[in-house]
Structure formats: C-alpha cells, structure tokens
Image 1 (spheres, one colour):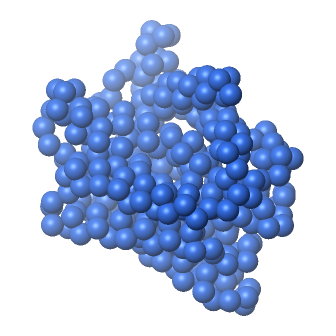
Image 2: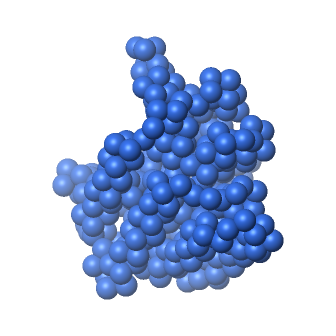
Length: 349
C-alpha cells in the first residue's frame, strides 16, 4: 500500500511540473498569435487539459459495454462538471486568498465579467438540456436530436468567445524551453513543442494518479459509479486545478477562472452529447444530484458576477457543496467493486 501512496506523490509532482510548462507555453502561444485572455483561458487551456479525461467515457462505453461500462462512462461524464464547478473553483479561490494574504500576489481579484458570464451561461444551458434528456425515456431518436443540439452549442460558444471583447494578457515569463536553449520566447518552433511535452506529462501523470488512487479506492470496496463520479475526476481534473493555481499566484485571475469555466462548457457539450447519444442516459439519483449541484453552483456564481460581488471567499464556498454531496454518496454507496480486468484495462489506456 505504501508503494501506491509513493507513486501518487510522484504523479502529483509530474502533473504540477507539466502544468507549469503548459501554462507558460499556452500563454506564449496566445501572445504569438495575438489572442485574447478569453481565447487562451476558455479555449486553448481549457480544451487542452480537458481532452484526456474525455476519452474515459468513450472507452468505457464502446470498449467494455454492459452495465459497468455504462456506469463508468456516465459517472465520468457527470463527475467532471461537478468537480469543476465546486471543488476546482473552490481551490482557485483558496489560492487567490492565500497568495494575497502571504504577499505572493497583489491586489484584489480582477476578472473579465463578460467572459465568465458567457462561459457560465453556455454551461448552464448545455448541462440543463443534458439533465432533462435523462427523463425522456427510451426514445432514441429524441435523445439523438437533443445530443446533436448539445454538441452544436460548442461551435457557437467558440465563435462568440473569439468575437467577444477581451484584452490580451501581459507578456508572460520567458518560455522555459527558450531559456534552456538561450533563444527568443516568441518562436513557434519552441512554443508548440513545449506545449506538447507538457500535455504528455499531464496525461502521463494523470494516468498514473488515476491508476493508484482507484486501486486504493477499489480495495476499500466502492462501486464503479462512485469511482468514476468522484475518485477519477480528482486526478483527471488535476491539470485544471494546477493551471488555475499557477495563474492565480501570478494575479492572472481571468486566465485562472476562464481555464475552469471554459472546461465546464467543453465538458457539458462533447462528453455529455456522447453520453446522451450512445448510452441509455438513465441517470441514477447520485448522478442527477451532482448535475443539480453543478448547475446551482454556476447560477450562484453567475449572480455574484452580474452584481460585481464575486470574491475569492465565495469561490471557496464551493467546497461545502462538494463535500456535502460526497458525504451523502459515501453514506449511501453500495459495495460493488469494478471487475479487476476492466479496471486494469482502463488504467492502461
């Protein structure tokens, strides 16, 4: 068991180092291409770090199939927005609070209200449609229509984000790869490789983390749905958490929050549309509850942003919603561990 904990620590170090490389590289890509903070945070960073965990439900449903495959797929789909809208935003707020109190960053939280409002509105619309689809019954044609609608929300969101007004960020710290090679930071032939190296580190670290945290949880006897809804997102959403903490430390609050809210929109469109289209999408009460909490949290933040009252302490309150629901799920979870063969195969992917 000690070996599992040691490898968890190694995986976390790898993810943190890779996230530092990624945030530095993606900021320079934005500078090089003349992109706004909104595009860098809500699109480039959010999609780049969200892609790996998007594969989990696809593999679970198509490769394994059956009840366990559906449980893992649906749990992973529902777990990501729940984690992002509560615990991840809470950690971002906590980072802002701690770094400000310790003098690591200056001033109060400064954000682009319009950008975050747009992100949250698109998330609420897409995810509300997804939850509603779970009550549509066995009519596959109707669910396919809803899935197509959810999927098409994202191109509209991308268009509005690119066209939306948002300032370019300040010039970031020198590109790490450029410092090593003693070259200029604006060279695309250095920026792009650094981003891909970082993404490889993020995927590798997250995979290692998932492998060992799920081994520990499975040994305790938690169900497949619990593992995919709660345990796996702790690891698969780590890149978003670390990226946002790094940007919060630097006082780049719009990037820190847009990285999370942009990932929320992506997760509410692509994986959710897949789930609605290719599974029975008959959500268990736990999955529905996680979705309601995610939407309710987004509505609260939307209200605070619209009245210019959002503070780090408000973001920190998301942890209360997260751990409250976790407590209920643990108390009512049935011991139904995932078959070893399926679990091990998922990890190797």
